[in-house]
Length: 417
Image 1 (cartoon, rainbow, N blue to C red):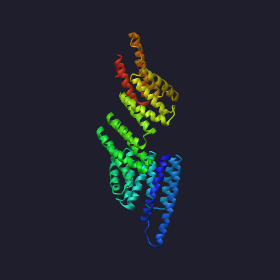
Image 2: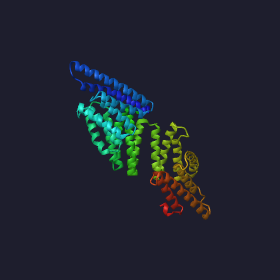
Image 3: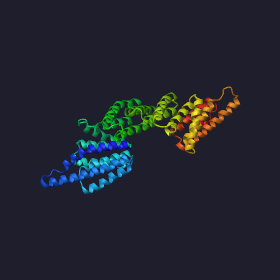
């Protein structure tokens, strides 16, 4: 969570200028009234600084929830002590950002809306600060899956921010607008058409905010969510979105464990759709990245080993499949009784046993061995379906391989089709 604190520090330090602008807007009286207003503004700024320091410290201690609570409680106190002050909009904005990072979209939207309303009241609907508030509310709507509501907010924010010289938030707005274009795509070509805009805006975000900033991570998460949505639409859409997401992760850090995990997920998608030639290279690259970050016994490294075993079992390398899946079967059995990946390992080992049978065997012996292995595959799939659901990608993929093997060996049963 220290990554989040870098951006939080930057947001609050950059907000000091907007707070000063807010102070100028909040008190222009002459004489003693001006002195009183200035004193009130100084007291508010001092209180805000203390509040921010406390929140940042909590974020650095990996206590995001407590940091959010401190901000929310501070807003309530300052609002009662310094009512109707424009500076409060920045605190609402930062509370919205932390809540968004914590996945609390409804609460984040409430604070973002309050920040927007305060800013509009003091600065008007066309001010750059209003553009920033519209942007934050729009990003929250995207994270919450409210894409129709997000589009006009983001478009208005981008229009306002484009009129400012080198406003770094413009790239964030353009990135999210391209994410919406991906969400609306009906073909791989339409997904790919958004790639240049996504990459250009993401490069600018990385240059101005840093690869570890909260805003960069939130933007990447927003795109990642659309990968899943695209995959639900079709394999070709999902594959295009996967490759697009990988290109963004490569810009952020080409050696990251997060990129390794995405490559594993793409390889698993290929495996489940019988695209073994594509699964292998993606899995090898993802596995290498994860091994560079984690020890051999780490769950993610074991996950790659397991998937490689399943790819070998579904293909022709029954020897490697038997070795790899024998190891991962023990690994997952030790973790949990009835672990779905232990069941999948059983599925793969049964596949490997069929493919290892000597073609010179007597037909009766061969039929008996094949029948036993297919029954083991069916039992393993039933266990996977119980744990994961019948429509899970791994279950449907395993069912595909069972049906193929049953037909190939002449042992097809109605339930295998």
